[in-house]
Length: 186
Image (cartoon, rainbow, N blue to C red; front, side):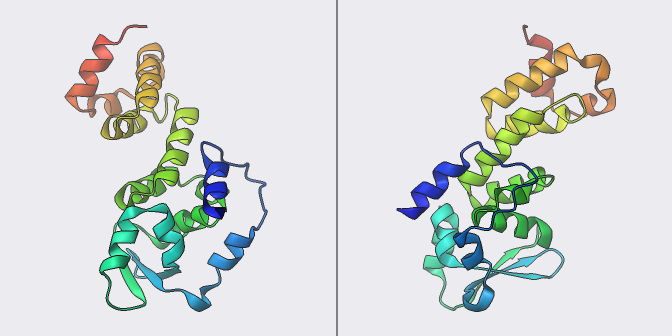
């Protein structure tokens, strides 16, 4: 199955910024001539897509399409701007570098719509890039989604690099996270 091969190419791997390869899937999916789904973004833009691609990556999309009575289907995604939606779609269309620099926003979209391959790619990014400047944001993502490895890395940074971390951000963390920081053993 082509989709199985495609999925295995993305697990935890995000190509560099220089990746410019246009795959057949990307070429087909970005041809909007036969688009049958439109996302409505927070900035009012309509972003076209295709049911067969979206349903392959998300049971939530599949359920929406099963219940729909009219085509094209409109999906209100007013929590996300057009750039975030388009980045997520491009990732699904074989442009895995399209989410670089937008991982946090794209992650929220992936969680909302249950796009596991995108959740995994963003989680890998968070685990690889967590540092003293973003640890307070990433630890909340880790706790909200039970990402054990990300939790461990964040707690380690919070304990080992506490002098480098903005204390006002630490003070805003939920009590359960603060308690775990206090109890964390190296």
